[in-house]
Length: 250
Image (cartoon, rainbow, N blue to C red; front, side, top):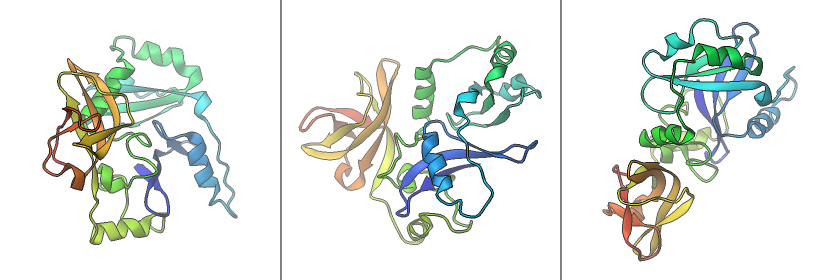
């Protein structure tokens, strides 16, 4: 299961997949970018009388993402002591394969006929799909609803958790004033972010991440619905040319 770790005010502290190892019954928390120290501190804060050990296993594990309709079959049934689960790098089928560092050579041999993608291509696919990276695109100053993650990364039915009351209020009567949207620059480049975006002389939002795409660039930006209004393009400096086009309705 994929989910968010929220603060008392409902802001996004981290994200993770939660996996359970069938052989041992242990749980693995896996995140693309949220620091292991953040997850560990959050868990240990609430261990009071239970017999629980929380350890950072990052150094001893490796991972590979396999894309395509034949991805799961290519991985095969023997995971070399690892785990496989659906990823969140784009909207089409792909699988994350985590395995012990000692299995590096075996995994490389298993996938020898597959083409390796660059990190830039992974980022391009994620941004093109409008999937927020936590905490880069959606972080400690943002609500899950602003990034569209309230639908599949927040529970409205489980027991108590930090931020639950805020989530319940937003679901029943609230509206967010900002949205994370896809943006593009057809003829130029975008800064890697974070970078302010302007509607005229006023700050209308912030570019959170960007990557080259063809002859231009695409990115994700958090924009103010009030400041953007009917504008379909924003500038990178006050009063500057509107070179950043909003690619979807905020």
